[in-house]
Image 1: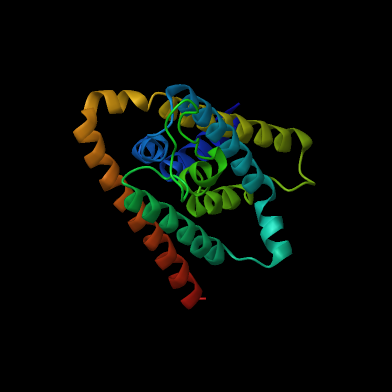
Image 2: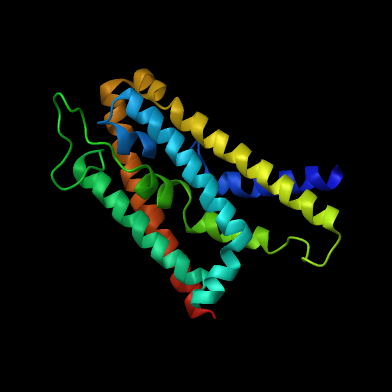
Length: 217
């Protein structure tokens, strides 16, 4: 049980500050402000599911997939940074809603929902940083020729930790509307503008770290 607890804490504690679901709430609001409450709840559920599967795939198969295609972690950081920067720029230019070029349409059909996978899951919630951390953690698993019980306990504990992280993401995004109610229209607008700019800066920082890693290889 000690091994299970240690693995759970290691995986959850290592990924939580990188994924940062609490800090991402303003960004989620910025991208879904034009959506209805029901649509926002559905998006929160979708982001949680996609995040879980992305992290599971990165944890258990990420190193093998990157090796197969000859892709390095610095390349993942640069590509992810570009995606984050593009998302932040769209938020900044659109005034807080990451709509498509023709914008959200009001009326009987309601606002056009933003996609739960891109950009809300990738790269906003599960970005290059969390993917690289998940790949690194997965590389620490017991070898396949080790005791079957040890391997099974490691896999089970890691899965439980990733489920717990997905639930945390869902709860943070699910109740994000309360932030809008507390801040009011003016406060929400200020928060969304600042959040968009921060997203853009984060993307530039990720690109910078990826380029620095390339230069120091």
